[in-house]
Image (cartoon, rainbow, N blue to C red; front, side, top):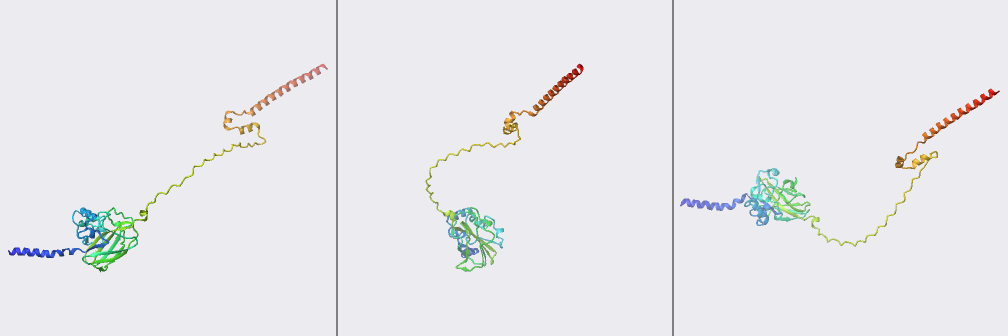
Length: 308
């Protein structure tokens, strides 16, 4: 009987102590609402479609919304947390939060405007906040990677004031359009823990994307095509003047005016050979007549001498 009383006393003590067990939880952003504050255990929108899908991908229940933390990081965030697992911190208890979806609970913001950040602290700690925003070229259809955030945080705050159970900070947003992620790193200095979270932001769409298409303009009446004027007849070809030298022979003029083809078909006679032949014949005749005349004259003279 005494043993039974002892067991009952131990059970009662455990029941009384159990509610204080979640003292290991510490904080998460609620403005703009983070995926942990929306979907994890104790979150604000655990029944939403994105949160259900994240819980299914997680393979079971989430950890507590304010307990996504890693011990001993010491500022080596990019070495410890893998690409594509930034929203879960690489922790199995939160891996469903890495799903790239466009229906997570989100906060509408204005490019170039200011944004108030409230980081709910279930257990306050001293430490530094580093807040990043995805680049202009960020693709929300892919899991978040470190290169999507750039090398420098948008805001760095050490030991901000705690107001109504939350750390309050304010930052100015750069120019962005569409869906983006505000990534918050809280590296505590009073514990060895570092916390990670993703908050979905929605910027207005680009101006070109919101222009209402206009109705096509009524086509103007077109003039009947005019008849083309007949092209002027090309001027008659004129013969190029033939310039001849005064001493040019008739044969040379004829050769110059005759086309190449005609000259190739009708060869010009060589007049120099004909003239030489004629000269030879004439010379022979002259010599012949001279010889005959000499013989006649010599005979006549001889006969006269004999008759004397």
